[in-house]
Length: 126
Image (cartoon, rainbow, N blue to C red):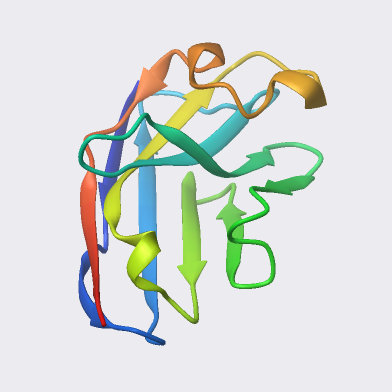
């Protein structure tokens, strides 16, 4: 399976972007897909996740209320709608997936995901 992320770009503070992650090869029908981000000099951090079958969604506190994760099973695609962007959202964004049904307490850990897409850069200018 391969993941292809796209949609990054340069946006002004308060703007919006929509990231896409297309999966090819197989689906994560019983698993989880997620977005992580990594800013220069910082560790990769959890942004949002979605359970593919149950459609349950999880968010980092820093993006709750501004970002929305969604999916289309038929298209095998996941999105991250990012509104009210701030300069601190500047980072490279990665999509990831696993076929395992993660428990909620581990869904935020990058080590739980075994398939990763390439990053897409999001830059928010103030």
